[in-house]
Image (tube, rainbow, N blue to C red; front, top):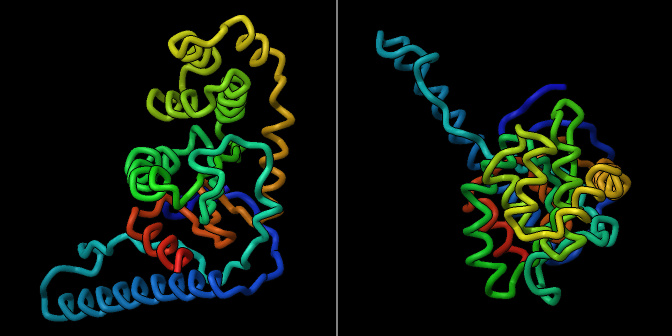
Length: 250
C-alpha cells in the first residue's frame, strides 16, 4: 500500500460519466481548483531555482504548500449506487448529498473530523442544504478499523450511531474492543446488547458492503467524499468543500 497526501489509498475502478448541468458546474470548479494549485506549485519551483542560482536558499529549503487532491477528471458517480441504509446526518430533503467513505483509524479522516466537519455542519447541514452519509472503508493495514466500524453500527442499532462515531474519532481506537465497550457505557447504551452485537460480528457484513460499494465507486483511499456524485479525495480544507458545494447549489 502507498500513501499519498491527505489520503490512505486502496484500489479504484472506472465508472461512466453522467453529465448534468449542476454536475458540470462542480466539475468546472474542481478543474479550476487544481489549475490554480498547479500554477502555485510551478511558480514556487521557479522561484526556488532562481534563489538557488543567486546563492540564496536551496530548492529543498523552500516549503511548497499542500495541493488540493481533488481529482477533477474522476467520473461522476450515480448517487443511487452510493446510498445504502447508513446513518444520515441532516435533513433527508437537503438538495446536496455528501457520501463520505472513511476509516476510524485513518489519521487524515481524523483530521477532517477535527478541522472541517464542524464547519460543514454549521454552514450547510444545520441550514438544511446538505445531508451527510457516513460509510465505512476500513483499510486492511489498520488493525482496529474494522471493529471500530462495527462498534458504530452496533451503536446505531440503538439510535446512537453518530454519538459513537464522534467518540471513536475524539478518543481514538487504539484501545480496541475494550475501549469501544467503555464508549458504549458512557453513551448510556444497553451494554449487553451492544457487547453481543460487537462480539458476534453482527455488523461485519454491513461494513463489507460499504467497502465493496466504495471500491465500485472508485474510492482509492480514505477519506473520500462524493458531493452529489463528484469525487473529492483527501482531508481537504473547508474552502475546497465550500466551493464544490456552492457550485452544486447553483
